[in-house]
Image (cartoon, rainbow, N blue to C red; front, top):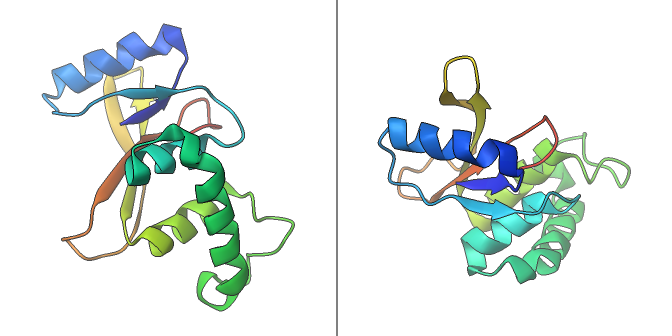
Amino acid sequence: LMFPRLDQDIKYIQNAIKKEKLEWKLITVTPTNNTIYQCFAYMIYGDLNQASNIKQECIHFMRFNRDILGSNVSDKNIANDEINIVALCMLYKVRIRVFKYNMEFNRLDIVFDRGVDDLNVPIILLSRHLDKYY
């Protein structure tokens, strides 16, 4: 599970993972405008430093697949998180599940589940925090 590095919240996420007996590894990333690409770089290539390559591949894919992605794709909204995630799912043939920590119930809730519907594709688990970073 990829999570933006906000030290005060990491312990809550670790406890939720432990409580739910999930065999997940928590990877923290520094929150930036490229966090989604850092997450994909780690999950696809095992290297956070590949984020700029992931971003360029995503932008290229989105520009040449506007007909598939829908009329919402334009040069103005190409940085939209949801559109990027859908494009990245299609590009890398994966499914994405985004979790958000629910402090009230001390659990991880699925807030986004999109991508390839094939059960044999990898599922990338990400977290959304403070409604900004993945």
